[in-house]
Length: 315
Length: 49
Image (tube, rainbow over all chains, first blue to last red; front, side, top):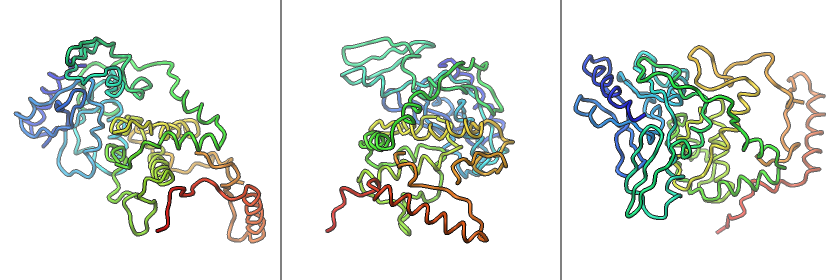
């Protein structure tokens, strides 16, 4: 995937030169290893700062909300699905966008790699299939496919669904995935066990809202947790306030979440809150045969009514 | 999520179906009373100053 960058720079430069876009949203190298930053390239000089490797897990759609200018945006499979969702939800116009599609082979899990080493990692170099991790007095080679983020391992849509430019040949999609073994385990628990499971899952949460801020779906001008009149949810660290926040945020993403993994990636304490959004994703798929962001022409299940909609829960 | 089945119920009642409404309300109240007070969603750490 590192070989994409020259093509990305070329396309971005052409788009800026021809004034097709005012800005290209992509990534630049972060100040610490495995942490690329979102980057707005506005000039041809800026273009040189763009990078592309396996540390571009942030969802760039997050930066499109309500923008007015013409934008070139670099989009992996999940980003492109979120861009489609943004267009459907009138958060950006399709005409404003030049989508630079990047067939993705998965992003690496910085948390997983960090946990393999006791010392600080100073440098991470990658080629097509391997990752070399270097630090003070150690160096180790890892196989990239073994250290991918969980959502990338379970990804069924690596290729962008909507794009104007394509950076490389489409990659082969992963087949025969079992996307929800962990979700089924939770579904099988008794109500009491579930309650305790979520209590343990969310116990480390410090209510920093990084998951919400990294999420392209969370674009409300005032989030329900920030409302004070009325105050929907307490601001304390009490487990019930923490749970209310996470449960409600997940529900707000129902039928919209593409499992891009931005929330989990952004979490400073490593909570897997994707367990909540993936349950809703699974339900949407099983009940409405719906996968978010796959087409501009189909309305999402939560704003359509069909006489055959499942209603077994209504007495 | 960890809420007992039966604590939340959904029914479809038209504004013209007053008797159905009464039956449903009675059924739901009895069902929830049988489950006892909800032990979840309590603020266990809250202190009153």
